[in-house]
Length: 141
Image (tube, rainbow, N blue to C red):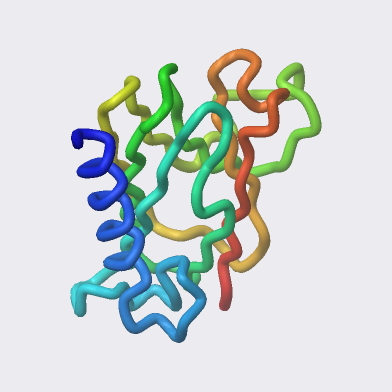
C-alpha cells in the first residue's frame, strides 16, 4: 500500500511538472506549470535511473528540481557545466546545481537556468554515473 502511495505521488508530481508547457513533459519553456515565476521539474531516482531522463527549460528561468528517491541507495541530481565521460573527470567546481536525497526521501534545488545549450545531469555518488545514472537538460534561448 505504501509503495502504491509512492507511485501515485510520483505520477502526480510528474503531471504537475508537465503543466501547460507545450507538451514536452519536462517543465517547458521556463514559465512552469503552476502559473508562478519558474519551472518545476519532478525527478524520480531509482537504482540507477532518473525518470524522466530529459528536461527542457528556458534560458534565465528559475528552475526548481524536486528529486524523489525511490531507490535503496542515496542519490543526487547534479547539473554539470561541462560534460564528462567518466567519474575520473568529475570536478565539483563545475557543478551548476545539486539536489541530494537519501533512500525514501526527497531533496530540492532551485537555480537559474544557464545559457542556451545541452547540459549533462548525473548522480555523482561513486559508481552511479558509471552504472548509467545520467540525464540531459536542454536550455533553450
